[in-house]
Length: 398
Ligand SMILES: Cc1ncc(COP(=O)(O)O)c(C=O)c1O
Image 1: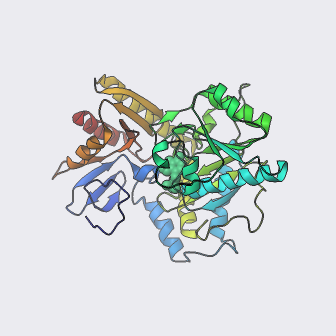
Image 2: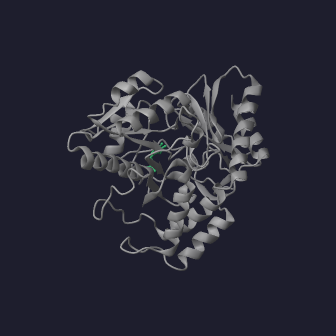
Image 3: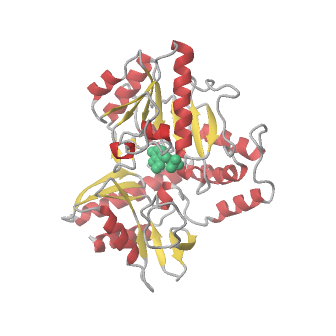
């Protein structure tokens, strides 16, 4: 293990040299079934041939042009992404490089929208307890988990947290005179695959519309098809049954299938908030990322492909439920975003699943979420046989 890296990650004892589909291989040739997808990034698996070809083809043309110009490939990607999010009300976007950067953009949009319309002082952004929105000082400020708030203050001012599920608390927190935006993951990823109820999201949308507070969904982990619809919040509705529309949506992680990318999208209300000079990002909309992103979007917007994601997710949940295993406390999730609560810390379990690898015996790559939740984020291309193999390893380790 190299020791030149800063000590920021609890690393597991493995180093990879190549990947193929749902599998990664180390230098000794041991193989590992990847149920982590690089934390929801490699949505089409490793070395997916159309993705590799698109990246190589773009690299042979040019890698980058600055954002003073458009490139054909970035424009095509942007158009396709806005179209993919049109059902959620999105009309325009800003392209960035990561989830934190996308959420920074969302916070800036909410603040400027409110400032221009209502003047200074109405800049608060409300988020949920247990949320995770990124690692920059501002997105840490937006993250509703105390453990991230040690050691790095002072934080960006103007964020407030509410407990998910508590409609009365949300009603109180969304003070029309002080709040510019509400930022929500409809299914929280990092804290344990925690879905918000339809009633809660409906109430949030209603309060935001009544009070002209921007309704912003962080779909960085749960979006891009992972729950079986392109955006996870498409599965939520207004009280009268109409599909929900957001004011702002953020995406990253799987957006370009493993090439760094992020996006902040906005609907009618907020799409023209930014003016020249307000915001920017050197690598945002990078042509190689855009070429890769086109492959992801062309695949993940196919209704039959999305249906398969739901079916595979149902297979995971029904299989784990069928075990009736005494060490499994609960299984939650939708599509290929699953959390299995166990009766012990998840981390040693992750280590054991990797260390199992040997000649002829695969290891399994899993994630944790919270302390005692195993988080399963397989690539969308995972096969039924691979799902069964991965689940059997989990059962063996339980
Ligand atoms: C919901 C959510 N928002 C934001 C982020 C931050 O994304 P990034 O690590 O790309 O900055 C993450 C990363 O895990 C996330 O899960």
